[in-house]
Every structure is written in C-alpha cells, then in structure tokens.
Amino acid sequence: MFLRPNLRLTRRVPFNLICAVLIFLAASKAANADELAVWNFNDSDLNVDHGSGILTSNLNVVNILFAAGTTTNARQGDPAGQALSLQGGTSNANNGRNITLAVSTAGFANIVVSLATQGTSTGFNSNQFQYSLDGISFINFGSPFVPATAFGSVPIVFSLAAIAGLNNNPNAAFRIVFNGATSSTGNNRIDNIVVEGTTIDTAEVPEPTSVMLLLSGLGGLYKIKRRRKSITK
Image (cartoon, rainbow, N blue to C red; front, side, top):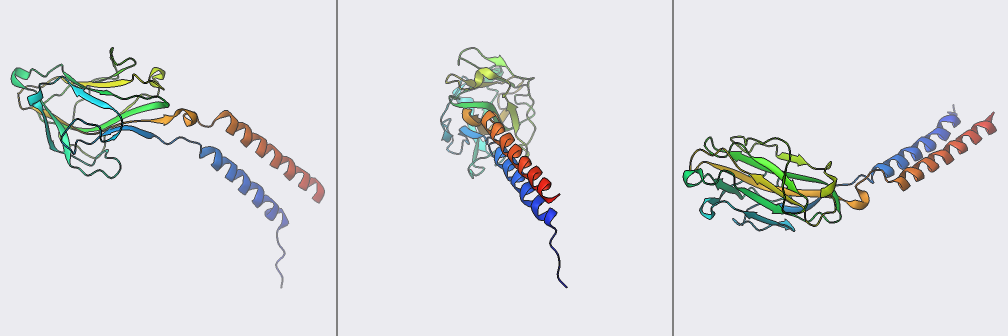
C-alpha cells in the first residue's frame, strides 16, 4: 500500500517556513546591549575594569574602602572579589556626598545603569540616583533607594531609555548621592556597576528597511501561493 503525499501540505510548509525565517531575521535585528563601562572593584581601586569611564567621589578619602563583593550583576565572568565600601565618616560628614561616573555614550542609545548594593543599619539609607547631560548639572531620576542588608541576587537597575538627551552624548554622567548614615562606620557596599546601551544603528527595532523587506517578501510569497491555488483548481 502506497501513501499518497498531501500536496496541499507540502505546498504550505515551504511558505510557512519561509515566513517564519523572514520574521526571525527581522527580529534578529533586535539590539543587544553593549557594556560601555564596568567597575568590579576587584583591584581595590576606582579604575574602570571593562570599557571606558571615570569614577570619582567627594567622600572623605579615609571612608572610601573596599570589602568582600558579590557576583550579582558581574560581567565577563568576573569573580565576587571586592566591592566599594563607603562609610558615613566622622560626624556623618559624608551624608550628601556622592560618587560620579563619567561615561561617554557616543554612538549608543537606550542607556541603562545597574549595580549591586547592600548597607548596614547605620549606613546610608536614602540614596538618590541622578544623571547629567553635560557632566555638570545633575537631575534626580526616580525616588531615593534604600540598600538591602545583603547583596541578594537581583541588582538595582536604572533604565534611562526615555532620556533622549543621554543618547549619543559624550558628556553623559551619572551620580549617586548618599544620605541617612547615622554612624561613622555605617556603610554601603556597591559592586559591579555597569553602564550599557545599544548601538545607534540597531537601537530602533525593527528598522524601516527591515520592515519593508519583510512586507515585500511576505507579499511576494502570498502572490505565489495564490497563483498555485488557482492552478490547482
């Protein structure tokens, strides 16, 4: 006994398969974030570890320390190593002071800043994230955040995609202002600070040309399918 092939099915499969491939190719244009700057603090300093950027602080130098870190938000296989540890200082002098990240976003959009953090009960408990379009004037972004008592597995993420002025900006900068410390040794640890974005060519998905190619391809395939149907009638 011979099985007769289903000709309608064999015609439909290539059409559906090609459609799926076209949709996949269009979706594959979706931009993956590129790391612009990463600080893991494993060298017990403020130097950037991957990418390019400058981290500065106006906290008292004696209160800028390093302690055990985490792999939360770590990149490129970085080990837990060390974390930045910031203390309240004598008479809580470091309340109102900050760390500032200068990171050029030239060629990039959809900027995101993320980090792992934890704090002691007498450390900074009201920390304000800010951004700057010129590296001079800073604007609050969201409400102050309170560090958890342990790093945990989920980083704090600041998605700045809606701030168009940060796109393709060589003067972009980011800041965390610390407040709420109630003792000189109360501290916050910060680890694995990551600034990332998507390249300008792929930031908008799908691109107009991709949409046109997809639509024209689907239109052509639909006409072929219609023609085949009319022939078989």
